[in-house]
Image (cartoon, rainbow, N blue to C red; front, top):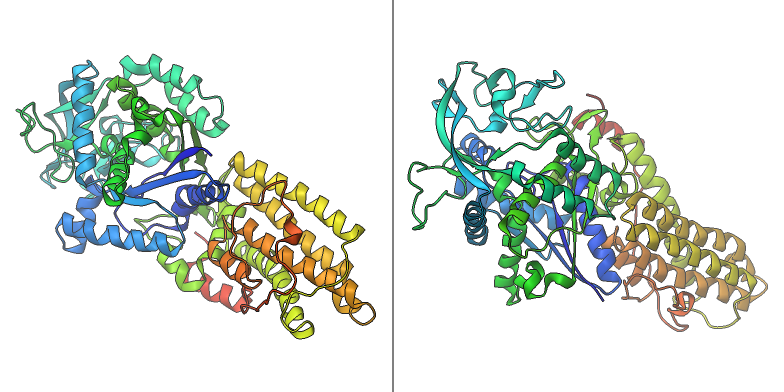
Length: 567
């Protein structure tokens, strides 16, 4: 079995995440990690809170807290939210912890020694009214490339171009709205990405398994021409810039590393945190010279993060000249929108993770965001589509099947898997059709095509319902108990099988479904298994209650009123 390292984009510390964040990174990483574990592979799923930079400082100030206290609280809030959604992190770390601080300073040191970092006197935006230099994310204005109003100083969300604050037209402070801005001299470190462009292009060219979205974004930035990126900021909160003696670097006192320099390094830092907490080792996951050459590394993220993970972070790794593991496959997602507009943490538009769980259990959201997520294009969330998906897929197809056959067994066979009868042509056809559906689901999961995998799983559930309509054990029982027993026994084995198929996406429900037939095996079904003989005759079964309650029109109306149904 393989060793697989999985990371998802680090969530910013400034507040609970919305469903768009979940759908575009953390949830697919979890679903795929669960799938690979269920196949028997050793999977290490790493994530962390991204805690540095101005977003944390401003959010802490708004909350009336010092930034460390704020980050401490928010990390726990986000950790609990992830756990409540069933996100199976092996470790959920913090970019403010010591391993990331030490590693960030290490990479900066070796990059500078290798000639890929240099100190420059820079001209940066200074807000006179705020009495501070403004980090790039907190300068906003008009994009010089596409004319989008409200572009940030690091990136235009409209055209995707990476920017510097001084590129913006009519800039203003996102902190106060002040346009009383000046350009002043300040010293900063620059990562010389221009020197690494060839190495990065060769590295990307070696990745044959990348999806079109991820590779096209990476090549777009290369074709437009890389720029040298400032990797330090005038902030108090972050990984400090140090000199050779470990103290403040002369002339750069009080400066910290740019959050987009240190945050991806936290994938490594969080793995070290995991190792410290579990007594395991971490270097054999990340160092090619210490055992990581057999690791398959997969990243999941939204499309807005791709440039940093295909250009900036690889520049750090490749420029170090050290044998660090780089990503093998990068799965990028488009945006989940809110009725045609964007979810927004800062503007509190859309449904957020904590609010979602107040409305319905996690598996309802996990199914919809996986089966109808923003995989190959931007996708709009609507309450009506959500209601339809849950009612048709989960309540009518999966839940109804499990409830019908288990309840029938309780009422007509004393709650025990019946003996008698032999499977016939109908069961043989069912098994052949199931093998095809499971093979399709397996193939699509392997390809990280989550919507297609979910639909193949649903197709298997539909086969079970169609089988019950044909076998009709409730009718057969009137004249042929053995025929009814075959139908019931087959149906109960399907319950166990469907739990296994559901487990990567519906982990909480899968356990209940399996428990209804006394099963505990939630491994991914293998091609050669005898699926329809896994639940033996004589085993007690027990109905677990309604698995998926239908979403009523009144609920949709209430939620639309509370959260809005249009931008």
